Image 1 (cartoon, protein in one colour):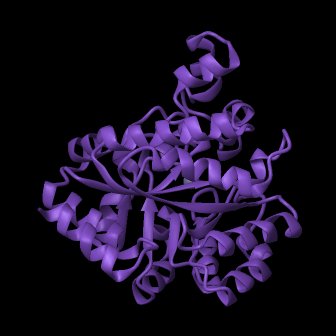
Image 2 (tube, rainbow, N blue to C red; image 1 turned 60 degrees about the vertical axis):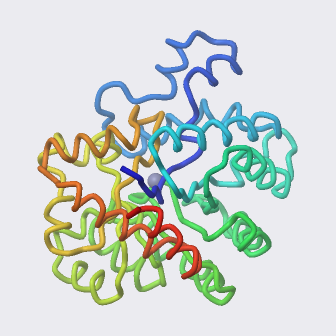
Length: 314
Ligand SMILES: [Zn+2]
């Protein structure tokens, strides 16, 4: 099945073989350091798995390489369009400029013949000035490989409303945005994110606990970027059967299906689809609806959406 993926982090999706090679450590060690083995206890612990991949993402050459490799991995999953996200400020340790970081990643992606765009992540816990830079660069590259921004990081510790001023600026600059919300925090976080102007919500699964959140999502036609395996890895649900994706889908919420972090969660999009079919008896038609949802809410033009739709249902 052809697929769209809207929620995949570059730094969480670096091949362990590449980490092993570039850090000169064994593959076993690379897997141990970058992949959650059993269940982690929290989002915080899950986020610690990004330290190692970020170590190698500090040079142009490595950024080109890991971007190209992710695009190749997306192709193996039959992805026809992906919005790949990363936090530009995480790659400044060895003197790269934000221009060099963004153009290196775009160069790597262009080496693979598939349609991709970038979402630049502001980070919870970063300063106002640091996150403002992300908005500035998103504006600079908007329509030239960058299509929007996001807010990622530890949601429980940094509530979304702390970032209102930044999202007001993004709105004024006409930069579309998605926000990680309703993952480590509850439904109110989703409501706040939508009220700030988010067009999509990263995860958003806690909406199932609030009629108010569900109504607002429907009213504003918001899509949820659902990443079931990631939610299991951060211990939100102890098994897939308890994940609310089916309930959300049955309530006609615009659900899209994603991996979040291919390496950290040790998952491909193909495996995600298979597990969802096995556990919830989703049909191919259901999965096509999720992909149509993804096209509808992608940060691209109407014409591009129509082109993708033609390829999806061909
Ligand atoms: Zn995410």
